[in-house]
Length: 467
Ligand SMILES: Cc1ncc(COP(=O)(O)O)c(C=O)c1O
Ligand SMILES: Nc1c(O)cccc1C(=O)C[C@H](N)C(=O)O
Image (cartoon, rainbow, N blue to C red; front, side, top):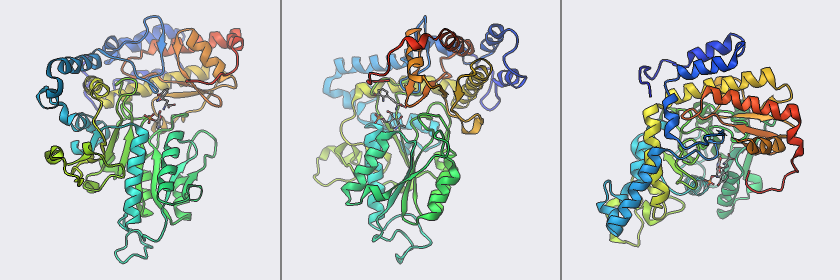
């Protein structure tokens, strides 16, 4: 990897200049080759296992294996063979604090202090425990300050049933979990899960989040994505957090579709809590552990889903029947961390750290700029469902086509791995660590060839299953 570019300057400015100059020039192959030659991250691709004869554009669902991820997995397998139960204390580093240790390694990616991040559970489980925790705080009258509170100390009035504010384009699992948490507290989710509507079916206007907060004074938690899973719209985390706090609500985020692709500043933005996975842009492998952030001011709270792995570490093995939560985000762990599902993340994060998240973001924007420009130029029947503005664009591009499902299957059969999300989106993710500018050109070439020949029309309609 060429390290001559410091973080801060944009080594991808030449790519932007090419695109701003009106497209990809008369010889796109030559232009892509030039951009790849100038790419300081180009050397990284050799360390990832992507198909030799295909194009992997699905890193927003499952990132590929890498040398570093497999090396850290192999190390833990060797430790298991060698140390057996002793690995919890004698492995180097010991397994006992794996959640905290790898959490600390992730913290810079989200702009957090080391003890504010931990790996554990899955996103869905972490939504359960964190939304549950903050609902309990509200119901106990301990919520954020509220100007209109009936409570003497200005905090949440415990007689008011708190609502949770979400949006209609969220990943469904989050709604399932939040509804369950409301139900378990005797709160009717049909009434208290407040859903911000989309104006265009693709994006959420932050002004609409603010408007719902103005209109309803019972919102105790605003829970939004940092980036939408379908369109890839990137949210202004600081703006949403400020709106939540101004309304006397907590601000929580599902950051699955941005961590590892987009830098975050959760502490500066005042985020209360966040969840994300590590199998997408963090490339830690299928079913790899989830991750979560809890702002330091909330450490010491009792998690809604308490378990012994979240107990204060120093006394965890005293086996007290009374639970003492760890004084860190580690408290939101529940049971024994699956070491083999945690191990690849250690190496995978090291590779991203070496690349630098600012540089990854700069390259990702250049790649998606290019993809959008090529689609505009060459695929008139395809619409761009992702915001064009760089500030509101995450790491993937949603290509909309009436026959998107069949198109995605035709692409997959031709070695271009993308995914389909109903009703009409093919998601294309040129992830920066291992995608070349030439790959983006090749994807567009293949889509064009399929559409020109009508090859997608040979596919049967959906049979369901994993897409
Ligand atoms: C935004 C978002 N939230 C939640 C989930 C569910 O994650 P998990 O299956 O790890 O609980 C996913 C993906 O599966 C997702 O993309
Ligand atoms: N988590 C997944 C899985 O276990 C199988 C297939 C896909 C996934 C996904 O990550 C889907 C993903 N959350 C999405 O953005 O659609």
